[in-house]
Amino acid sequence: MIEVYLVPTANGQKVAIMLEELGLPYVAHRIVRTVGDTPSAAYLALNPMGKYPTIVDSEAEGGPLAVFETLAIALYLAEKAQRLVPADIKARVAAHAWAAVAASDLTPAMATQYFLTLRATTDVSEATAWVVDEAHRFLSAIDRRLGEEQFLAGAEYSYADILTYPLVATSVQRLEGGISTYKNIRRWVELVGMRPAVVRGMEIAS
Image 1 (cartoon, one colour):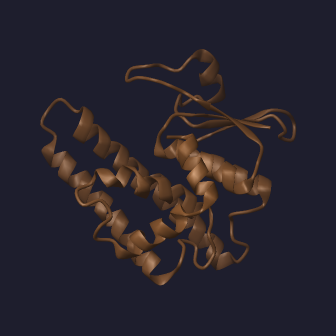
Image 2: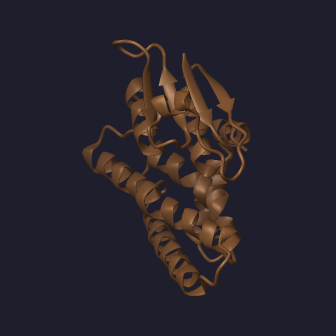
């Protein structure tokens, strides 16, 4: 059994979708927190970063195993189930690269945009303009990729799509115009968003 500790964010949705797509048995602990809350010592023992989500796999080889950081969790789950990572080397490399774009580029950009737009108490207009431009740079690259292939890894749906979808479906909507100018992303969002496991995962972590 896998226990997942999550908050209602895009990162929580990514892990919930992974679990639903893979059909792995799990229990979700939905954490309610407010700004300024600090993680407990017990949670820090599982995740030294103090962030969400974290999973604990009680059936891991060698005993219960805690996995933190969303990208690491997604890879762990995909390897455990032997699914959602393409077997073909070209597609597999593409999946890893676009998963990294979601984790290392688009996610931090949208997290920073959230803070600058909704929480900052000083004039941060210059920084906000820069991070919004960066977000659009990443979205433009994703849109070009999806103009070439049905999914981010190619013809096959993969964990890279799962790590990207919640960001585009929720966080990116804060940007002026959302995804209205990205026709290939719009096509992909409609396609991925119809998957039953995606619908369930989004609801679980919303």
